Length: 210
Image (tube, rainbow, N blue to C red):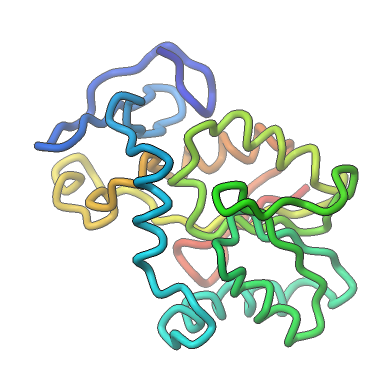
């Protein structure tokens, strides 16, 4: 078995609970769930549909507004944006449109596809998505292809705690979460995209830029 980020074969068992095992890459520190513990695609979609990820949910829009603020503080309104893994409601796009940005949505789980297969973007947002991706290498290749040469990727995900606290961590209770990252793992993801990482005022939001 190879790591889904760096390709290393240095994989060991990191933790186990009643529902799943968690493996860890010794090279890039990715912690991931083996495929035999994945939900089916239908189960995954059903779980997402239980979430109230709508424009009417103030808690959800407040959560997304932090991404909007990061973008507004750093990038002009003429930048093109792709919301990768937008969800059925594509709420981030709606919030960005209200601020004057052009944002397209992409989420194959909900049959939301890019209109132009050749288009590239100034910014690609991966907000609470990368922890769900089954084909992480393929998705990173897709993102790299769609990113302009000087473009920026914005990743939002929680970094995992130390080993003593990992099995107590709320993030692993969501069975659709199958990839877990340390700051080193984020650095490796950035390297895959020929980018470097800079932090923001939000501890779970990372900018990957040239």
